[in-house]
Length: 133
Image 1: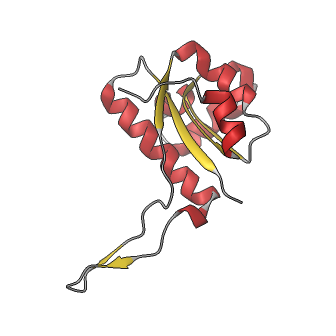
Image 2: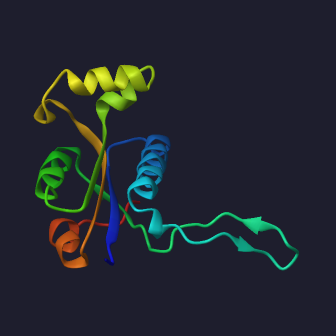
């Protein structure tokens, strides 16, 4: 299946957090869709560079209050990931896991999301959003 992935970040985050959250979500996407990562590629002098993404991965911006709505709208997509505020506040992964388990989904605040699925479905959800600036 050909999928279109996009990352959507809260446009109110500082630049450093935007970069970090996008990196975390991109890493998670590779776990769920390993075929999106290309083969290792050698340079002409024999240095092998690890594979990078085979598809464009646009990074879009949205007002913070829209992220939970977009995440809910994407419920039927094959890949729907969120970087929740609990991750930012947690000391380690165990603490994060406990914080997530302590509240229902509606009690968590996404700071960034990654959606991936058929192009038309993804565009329907976030096609109006601008590229992150």
